[in-house]
Image 1 (cartoon, rainbow, N blue to C red):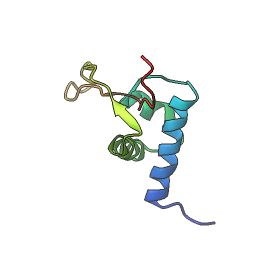
Image 2: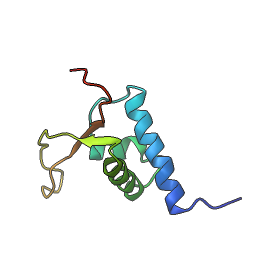
Image 3: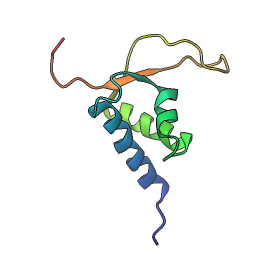
Image 4: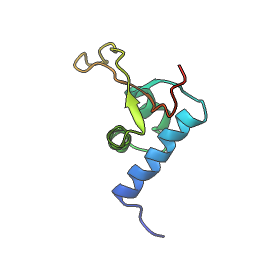
Length: 89
C-alpha cells in the first residue's frame, strides 16, 4: 500500500474544508472549529496548513470579525468563509 505524503494530506484536507462550506455544513467557521470537525481524519497541523494554503489562494477568506481569545488566551480565533464569487449581498 502506498504511503500518503504530507503534500497529499494537505490537499485532501483542503478538499474536506471546502466541502464543509460548499455543502452548507458551515457558512462561517473559526479556525479551531474547522480543526475539531475534521480531527478524526487529519491532524491539527495538516488542517492548519490547508487553511493557510486556501487563504493564500483566495479560496477561503478570513473575515474581519474579531474573535475572542482562544483557550490559552494568546491568539484570537480567526473566522473564515468561502470567497464570494458574485456580488450578491
